[in-house]
Image (cartoon, rainbow, N blue to C red):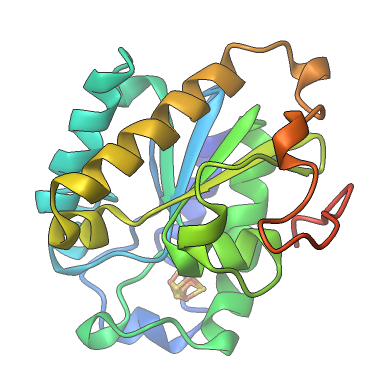
Length: 211
Ligand code: SF4
């Protein structure tokens, strides 16, 4: 398995999909390559494309505030996106773009090997859990995936639009992430009894495939 910087260096010249045409640069990811907690968002926006780092700007500031809330540094985690190049006008990435970019994210997850993956927003949550989701219904819950825990939460940009009520929910979810990270890896598969079924009563999947 190669080092993360080697993968990032190769990704920097990737032209596997047409998002390469409109980008300023590939936004591969940032943070601790051995992080226990990894965040995954949808894709770079305007500021991220310019600066080459995920979650800068107002949404990034809110993430930083949440890191403060649970007493960790931004440099303690790893932050990446489902697609590494900015979609034009911040549209959702297309299926063929996601498919083309998927190997970069798969490799990142394999190399970093985080205990906990936190997905930011409906799109990233649905992608990692591989099914349609209602982010407001499942946010903050734990889903075992390939020996890790996935905790979907709200997208910081949406939280900024939603005000203090939404920020309180985001704080709750970050507290859940911290609790999961602090548990031994072997014990992570166990879910709290109240989360043994979906909110609508349907059974949960014991083990979801990441891709
Ligand atoms: S979005 Fe991903 S697959 Fe497409 S060009 Fe950028 S790095 Fe390559």
